[in-house]
Amino acid sequence: MTDAPAPGTTISCQEVVELVTAYLEGQLDDTTRVELEAHLDLCPGCVDYLDQMRTTISELGRVPVESLSEQAQDELLAAFRTFHGTG
Amino acid sequence: MQPQAPETPVARTAGPGLPAPRVPPPDDAALVDRLRSGDERAFAEVVATWSPMMLRVARSHLSTDASCEEVVQETWLAVVRGLAGFEGRSSLRTWVFRILTNLAKTRGVREARTVPMSSWGPDSDEPRTVDPDRFRGKGDAYPGHWTPLGSPARWEPGPEQSAVAAETRRLLADALHGLPERQRTVVTLRDVHGLDSDEVCGLLAVTAANQRVLLHRGRAKLRTVLEHYYRSLEEAQP
Image 1 (tube, rainbow over the protein chains, first blue to last red):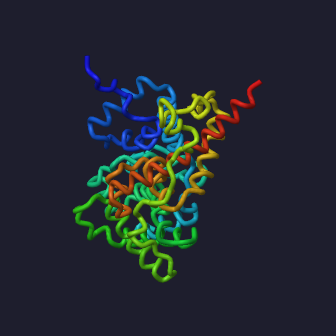
Image 2 (image 1 turned 120 degrees about the vertical axis):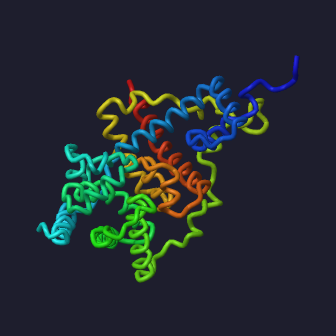
């Protein structure tokens, strides 16, 4: 028998939520990553938190963005034609 | 969306109200050749695909939408004129963004609104990203762990349901507007446009560590906004 703490119990949920971005970026050192993943095996709340962060990120990929106005894009295309002698 | 894939319709229709095209690393040599040979469709596509990102980067130097739009237009005109001299030492996109940054900075000085480099560091005084009251206190047997009420709950129904999806995106768009400028820029380039960490660090001249902090804080706030929404859905259940 050993007194070493069980994997996943040396990290708190409050620490996990501040490490999720580094975790998702693959920037955690191995020891921390293994401990965080062991924590996830024990903690449905943190699993949900991580899922929510992933959902947030994937939904951000569907958010509408502003672009140049159609008019500005048409003007640029006209300038491109003129420059290349095709307009 | 590959700027050099002419059969896809996204590029010409990119504009307010549409999702950002995903932006994989472009096949530079082919694209540069097409642009140099006067291929209008290639130019239209690259303008449509990159301009939204460029507008966001310009926003870190300039205070009005009109100034940003003008500086992005100026950049494209400089690209048209300068493409013959592009030597391919960096990627085309990096080169275009460098022109943009230089023009935006020059103009920012004129408009007396530059964002100094040092301000890309993390804001040291921001609190934790999740309300500390949601975690057990020091005297508890499990300090720092979720309280029963504080623990996150699954988001149901999720954004796979169309009404929820529409509202989710509307809320995210609004919440992005409300983020501090630097967080907004990093989150937009990373998560809305899908650029990778290295490219964003290069574009913004920010360290990887600072970028990650800005990304973390921005994303955490957006998650909180969605959490409020999903909780309100749950409370509205009969």
